[in-house]
Length: 254
Image (cartoon, rainbow, N blue to C red; front, side, top):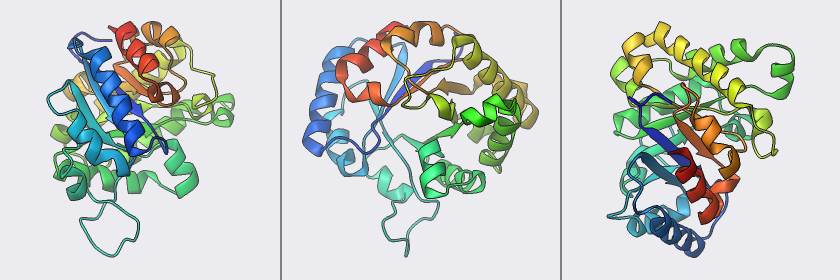
């Protein structure tokens, strides 16, 4: 990790935790992480727990993220949530284009780009997920897939907005499987993404953009992953559902 870029470690809780469980988890995290200043810490509960978690983390070093949002500002979109609704709960970050959203809900690079622009319009920082499947990696298509996703998902952003955007490289084959990219594989993908951003937005912006790794991040592999020059944090799934493991990932990254 480049010292000029502050680590950002986010927990994606996915469809887990009731309101009571969510509050209990962040209360534990507040105790475990009270003295951590070197890392931007983000938790992303389900929509139903945003209000309670927002209140629970007030005056703490933990920031609130959402797991998704709609690109439109209000209207006849049954079951959807817009940026203005997230802002009411002091949401600072939103995960966009997670592989599960792409796989199960038909999200595309173009729809992710529209959501990213809507997030920036509301001063919410998007965490944009990209990554290849196992079949794509084995076919030698990793860079081709990443280029398509990065170019498509960042389309229409200004250089200023890009600086406030986080990229999460999540190899689909490593999410929830217990497999993770080796630190070298992660570094290669992150360096490739940074080089792409430089061609799209300029060298200075690319140097400042933070790129997280996601995919079976655990306390045991956090330090080696975070020590790679282009890895600026982690988007943590399963291990973020338990306070001790999430706190250990953060502490082991410093």
